[in-house]
Length: 361
Image (cartoon, rainbow, N blue to C red; front, top):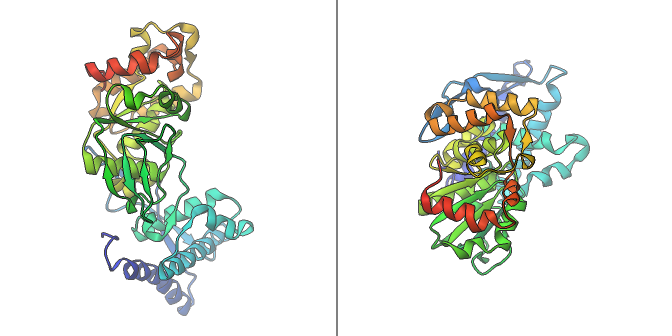
């Protein structure tokens, strides 16, 4: 269902009314109401499709949230509470962030992650994207480089003129007049690396480009923006991550999606993303000093072993090889390790060479 059309409100209100109708019907029959949620974190509910990434299968395993069970009754109540808030917002055409919802009753919700989880459960249960439920997430991602666009409220944003980064818009769906002459997009894992490249005027020097950082694990808006830019411009998208299991995991979220958000994969993933660096094979190739490397922890080794078993690794032999190099060396490296070669090695030598001579996989 496309929730961007004119029938959007009635579709969403109808979906919520159906849930409430089931609750009322159960009560009328003297039965304890039950809500059925899909197991979002279950790999058994996921299939890997090369063109989409990780997506939810048609017939998923579910779990029951019972209103008469002491363990699940509080969650049952909170789901209904947030459903009623969504219903009012859709009716009145108002929006709230997940943070706003939490602060509307901190004692009731307990902590922010409770709200975040329930919002995702509701989105998955109703099969409606979160932004169509009038819930915005506060943005942490940043963008810079050759890009301009108009926000939904008419604000014109020009990243090209700015030497500082701009926050990713909180309503990516609403941006229009998106213009760029960029030759590629560079997704940078960490804010510190992103800022360093900005200071070195990387976007203006070699080729016009767009830089995006999710500051670690990307939020929904950052992933939506990457996907939107891909849909509009179809220019190459590269990732610059630490050569460690966590960096690879983050890159896989951009490229293939996450298990918990697989029900939205079609809006969020860009399987065309390429791994530019820092590759484990680069560590040896560039003769990076041993004292600039970090030994893998037991946790790192377990994460790496689990990732090597994931369905998408099988169709990425070059990625598999890089993971094997890391597993064998039992070492990891942050992008900052390149400064052991020279202070501006990343922007002056490493990235220009990689981009000019096709050093991505």
